[in-house]
Image (tube, rainbow, N blue to C red; front, side):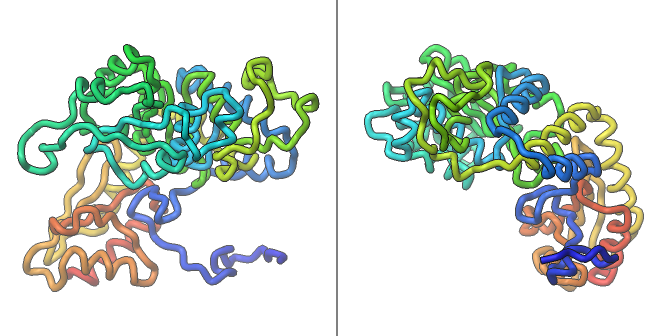
Length: 401
C-alpha cells in the first residue's frame, strides 16, 4: 500500500478516530506523543541494518550511564522487562535451563511477593513458569488495621527454591525497599523491581539501583517519551546478559557468533542458547534508537522544568473550563499537576456517566476514571495538544452547564 501525503492524517486514511488524551500516557489509550527528535531518530534507524547484539550492547552503555546500573537492555515494554528479568533469575547463564523455560522442574522456581503488591502485571513473572509465594496480610487495605507485610515475613518465606523477590515500587509499598534488599542480600537472592510508572522524578532512574535492587524495569513509552512499545531493564551485568540471551535471535553457528564481549561473554557459556522464552518480546532497531534518544532527553530535563510545562497546560484547562453549574474544578499540584472535576449531587449525570459521555463524543475525550465512584474525574496534561484544553472545556460546559 502506498501512503499519500495529504493534510489528512494517516489515521484518517485508515478510518481510525484520534482521541483527546486527558488520561495520560497509559497503554490503553496508546501512550503519549513522540518528540520530533525521537521520531526523526527512529526514521533514520529504519534506513540501516545492525547486528542486534551490538546494538543492544551500545544501548546497555547508555542505560548504564543514565541509571547507574552495571548494564541494561531495551525491552518491548516494562512487562517484557519483568518476564526477561524473572527468566534471568531462574536460568542464570545456563543455556539448558534457558531452553526449558517455562518448565522449571529442577530449578529455583519460586518468586516471593508481598500480597498487597499483587496486580495484573505479575502475569509476566508467572509466564516464566515460576510460582508466586505471597507473604503478608494487607490489613491497611482491608480496613481491619494498619499493618502490611514486614521484612521478617519475606525472610521466613525464602527457601532453596527461591529464585527472586519481586517488588512493585510505589509511594505506598511496604516494607520499604531497603529493608527488602537487606533480607535478600543475607540470603543471596536477587530482587526484581517493577518501576514501570515511577517516573518522574528523574532521580528514580537511579534510586532503586542505588538502594540495592538487582534488576529494575521501567516503561519507555510513558514519562520517558519513547516509543509506546518500549521499556528498560537495568541491573547487574550477569542478569542482563542472561535476559538478553533469552531475547535475541540466536540462529547462528557458535563460531560465527561474535557479540561484544563486554556485553555477552561467550567464554562463560557452555554453548549457544536456543531461542529463549523472551524471543516473543522482540525489540526493533527503530524502537531501541528511539528509546535511547528519548531517555537522554528525559534525563536531561529537570523535574522543575517538566513540572512547569505540565502546570501551564493544567492551568490553561482550568481557566478555559471556568465555573460549572453542577461541578467544582480544582488543580492538584504534584510531580504531574492535574485538574480534578468533582461532580455535585445536583448534576444531571453521575461522574461515571459524564466520563462515558466524554469518551463517546466527537472527538472522543479520554479522562482519568479511577475515582468516578467518588464523584471525581481527573484530567492529566501530559498528552494534551495546545488546542485540547479549550475543546475539553467546551464539552464539559455542554454536559454540566
